[in-house]
Image (tube, rainbow, N blue to C red; front, side, top):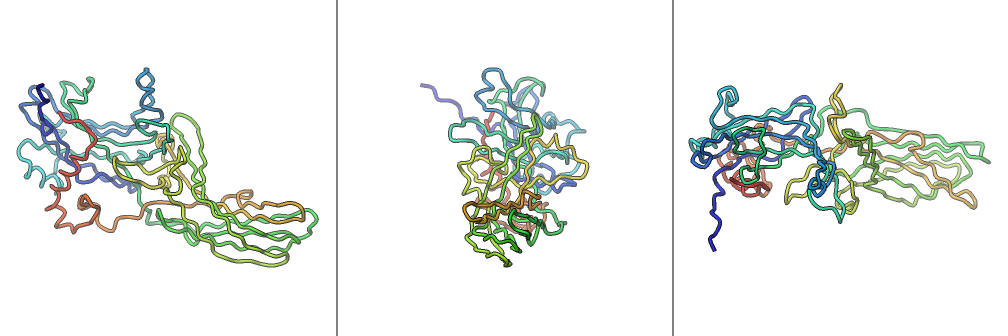
Length: 392
């Protein structure tokens, strides 16, 4: 039996990283290099595209003629033969190093994303779901064709999924605070609940401190305090679907006697590891073979069109008091007045300049800016082999 020819290195994409940061007012450029073999390309052209797509259906439904994928954004540039007005005017340090390392058949490209695009989000699939998950994803693809509009076969293309992420903003709002006063029958005095947080912004995995102050002037006894964190997901592109998922819920047994006061800080920590079974939970965009975390809060720029973002994610903290009233239980919920919000759950900002954020090694260690350029080839080779794409 004649074996298949090994031609993996005929078309390759090299990127310095997979995560590109949205700073709200601007987005990091996607810069990289495509290595090609002119003999294999022959008389065809080589293009590279950056696509932002929103998928809201399963792969198997596409087979029967239903397309549940919408391209939100598409940039295309011709690499070979080179077109002067589509060639980067200046090369980044990454591109200079790669073109020198890979030789004359390495062609640099740079894409500048628009600032109104959504970040990468994945909706957690259920146990019976197969294929690609619903959500927003970004993809860099290089391919050979006579025209970029023609149908591209997988054997003639190579693709690499990237992520657009947001980090914690530098400007913060006042600490969230809410209060509610509840009047009961057969009691001439009310129950007052005040809940607050020390800050608005929390990083993924950080414990959230909730300050609870109770002034119980009624004749009832508070038996329990429940604190929960809800994730609110709004799918705004093709429908007005709203999903509320409780990502953390803790119950504390605390007795607050009648005609007494109570003050205490409780800690809750929302984690993806405790919510693996919840279908439809919004997660930060996931790369192949990598884990992720709960979706970060969507940070909007003033005047931004929400519909183009596809999926909006926010969080709220809810405080509930459970009281005894002779033969019944009474529930006082902070949400009855208004939710304790906003809670901004995001990833921490990087502690190195973004111009050198191509310095991540395959094992996740961070190198100095000087060593990042020196070690870049090893990192890119690893990421290329790890790419979930097809080679020419």
